[in-house]
Image 1 (tube, one colour):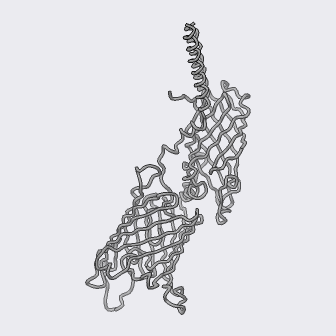
Image 2 (cartoon, helix red, strand yellow):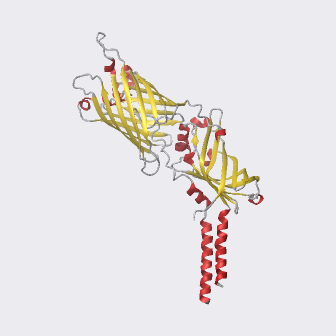
Image 3 (cartoon, rainbow over the protein chains, first blue to last red):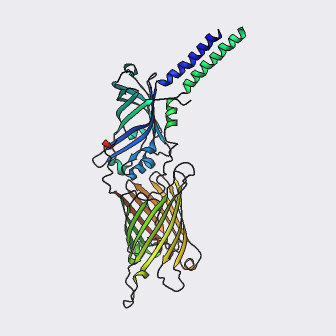
Length: 187
Length: 307
C-alpha cells in the first residue's frame, strides 16, 4: 500500500515539473519604435526586454525596462526619460496577455505560424487593452516571435508640449522581435 | 495502520494543495519583471541639470560626443540705473559661445564676451558619473579648466600690456548629485589665478566655493540658484559674492533662462573674482541665456540592419 501511495505522490510531483517544460523565456528581447514626421524621425531600440511564453495556457508576458531605450541623440533619450515617459516614476512597461489561437500552433513542428495576441499593455502607469497580430517561428526548441502594432502617446497620458508637437508622430509604431529559449526553473 | 494511512493521504493532499498554490503564485509577469534589468543594471542618472550651465557657472552636465551647443547670454544694466536708462535695459553686454563634445565626457568650448572684450576657452572633463540606486557612484564629478584673454586696448596708448598679463586661469572641481526627480545640488570649489592684478594689494590667486542648485517646478521649468562665496582675503574684502537666481524653460533642443544676478560677468573670472554688485543696493542685472543643441553626428543614424 505504501509503495502505491508513494507512486501517486511521485506522479503528483512529476506532473508539476512537466508544466515548467512548456515555458519559453528570453531576457534579451528586442523592441523598437518609430515616430515618423516630416520634420524628424525618431527611433529607439531596447534589447533588454524579458518575456515569457507558455504553451499550456497561451500566456505571453513582457517586462520592458524603459531606461534601456537607446536613441540616436542623447538629448532625445534624456527627454524620453525625463519628460515623456518619466522613467524614474515608471521604470518599466509591461504586457500581460494571451495568444488567442494557441490551439492552432503545433510547437513540435517547425514552421511559421500566424498568431493573434490580446492583453493589457501598461506604459507610463496607464493600462490599456491591445490586440496585435504577429508570427511565431518554431525552429527546433527555439521560438522566434515577431509583431508590429501602433499606439498613440495620448492614450497613455504622455503629454507632448506644443513646441515639439510637430516633431513627434501622432501614432507610434512598435516592433517586437523575440528569440525564446526553453525556460528551466532554478531549483 | 489506518491512522497512518489517513496521515499519508493528508500529506499528499497538502502537497497537491501546495503545488496548486505555487502554480497560482507562479505569475509569469512577476517572473519576467524579476528577470529584467531594471534593478540589476545601475543606469546613469540623467538630467542632473538641464544644461551645461546652472546659471552663469558650469554644471556637471557635458555634451554628448559630436554635439555642438550654441550659447547666447545677455546681461542688461542694473535695475537701479533709473527710468532714463529704462531700468538697465538700454545697456547690454553679451557673450557668444560654442561648446562641443569631443567625447561624452570631454568637452571643449570657446566664447567671446563684449564685457572687457574677453575671449575665453575651456576644457571640461567628467571623471565620475552618478548612477541610480545605491551609493556606488553617488555623485557626478567634473574637472574644469579655462583661460580668459582680456583684449581691451590699454587706456594709455603708450603703455603696452604683455600678452601673458592679459590672461586669467580658472580651475574648478564640480561635484553634483541629483537627490530626487526635482532636486539637484552642486558644490564647486574654485581657484582663479590672475597673471596681472590692478593694484599691489590685490591677490593673484582667488579661492571661492560655489553652491548651486536646481529645483524643478514642472516637467519643463525649473528654479535655479547659484552662489559663489569668496574665501576670506583681500579679494573678499573688496569684491562681493555673486548670487544669481533664474527661471528655466526647456523646449526640445532649447533652454531659455531668465535670470537676476548681482554680477554682470558671464565667465568665471568676472563672475567670481571681480564682482562689484550688491543685491541690497539694487545692483541687480536682469539677463537671459539661450542654448541650442545641434547634433553633428550623421553616422550615428540608427540603421535598421544593425539590429
